[in-house]
Image 1 (cartoon, rainbow, N blue to C red):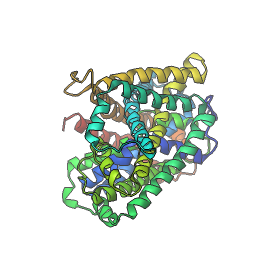
Image 2 (cartoon, rainbow, N blue to C red):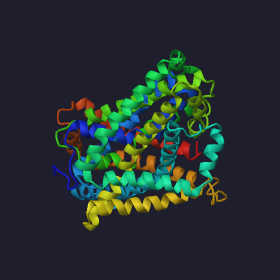
Image 3 (cartoon, rainbow, N blue to C red):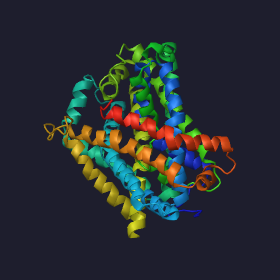
Image 4 (tube, rainbow, N blue to C red):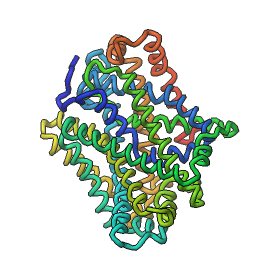
Length: 453
């Protein structure tokens, strides 16, 4: 059993928690989770979501970390070595390949969307120095999407930010970045939460998010909660598996996994409590979720509120930081594999993978303008890439990871890696989940997302 990775190690349990939480916390946490919570029964949805975290999200997360820490290499090589150790087929390495490809595809379009947040942050920075306010947010957003040059520029800036962190390795790059960015993200969230509490509509926002509406509980809502629990923890792309390879021996995987899940959920809920008071105060329709609200509705509120320009700049900085902490975890698995496969330096590997992801992202850039007429399965190019990665590859990868950990690895190995002091009843409960319950529920999510049920 290896005790260290050639790529470096997290210096502490806290470093891993910050990194894994940064991977899990992304653009979807800042708006999507509060939005779907309010649309699916508020507190009822939150309770079902937390249950899904317990029976779907955490078992897969534990499995990814177990595989990563036991193998101490990139996902492909960790799965290859662990398969050889137990005499299983090397076909299991396909999980690693699929995870890396899924992460690469997500990074390609995620960088484009993150570029939008950088662009808007820059617009508000210019307003601090006297530039004209955004008076027609819809036109501003549409003009950005129609400008491939502008999109390409911000896409390139964000990708350089990402590979700049990964190029410096685990300790000097990933750990140093998350140790700065995660406190910044939390600080920005708390500042924005404080402003939301001062609007006079905070109580309404709390009710909007947490008042249970049990009449909305349905099979579709439960599937939505399961899907959110799975995707919000950044599972199925082998990012958490890669981070697990750098986790020191002796650290309890259940403890750090539960902490990461709790932090990820807390960020999402705090974001909702920061944003919805503003939404309610200025009469904005909460149903205008996603980009429709962030880029075309909230700027109108920023124009009217006290210190709105500063608030707007901080809000888009928050989005950029959340995207940044996620993107470095998407670039790391492919970079680690390239280093192992070719023995090239980390900086060169990160630049190659980052450049390829940037190039692949140009398809998403052009999907809004010069290639807007192109349709793949009834979707534009970026939506088609997102569907393939998020709705097919990630849940399928997560299901196979659970099966590998539960059925292929020996109970002795998984118990040892999870926590030697873990009570037998807790280990047996995890084993039952990853062998039967979690794969079955992920199959339900997959079938639903593919329109089969």
